[in-house]
Length: 319
Image (cartoon, rainbow, N blue to C red; front, side, top):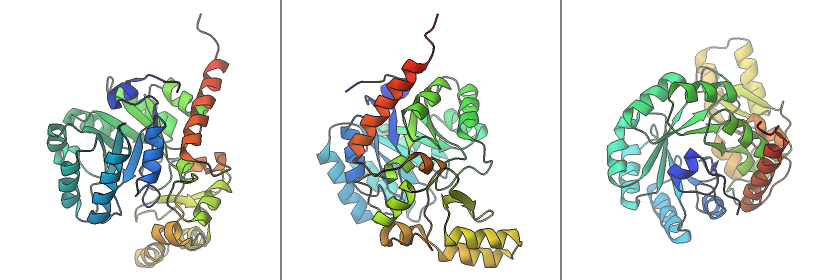
């Protein structure tokens, strides 16, 4: 394996600055995170939608499945977040990636357990606050990301550069619109120490989403995502009947209750588990247009590294 040493790989103890995003349903399992961690990156279990017993079992599978670092992503707003925190502390995951809340709520307890703590941010102000609270590193999410892009809708490249400048010395992982090794090289050039790949790993053999969901991602172009649900918790997903319905309600300035009813009637679960890619929320980033086939996760990691090396050698040599 070709190692790519950066501040992020040194922090996490991994060979490659490749982080698989914690994606509800897609990585709410051990198969995908194990495959990525075994390949030299950082696999991430998505705890967001998981019941405690399922999460407990999955964490055990991660412990038994690899001696390499892995992570758990926890949205702090989820129902029963404190019970999840208690369970995670029993398992002592090597890395925690927390989002949607302040780090002071969990930081001391996880640090005492020996867990490296990364925090997801979408702006320089939150980056400064998280770094000041003592997190070990940041995941910086830009507008191109699938799922929940930042309210500011600032692009990943600009946002990463601003955060790197705002919190020098804090390891940064870039996220949003990155699907290959050239994207990884670009983020490292901007000062990040690694990149998080979500949409690319949606189209993996190990992602536990319906084949129709994977096909929708692999078949999309870069123009085929939409952001909808403004004022309700904006999401980015593949254009379908749901996004068209939401866009029309937003265009005519429909009452908030009507928009909320339509927004809540469609779910990520329906798309991810049941294959409803017309009426469900097919969350994916703009980088879906750079993904054209479903592959084993280890092969995806291998390709990213090879693409990174080609991109690096295309750059003019330093004089």
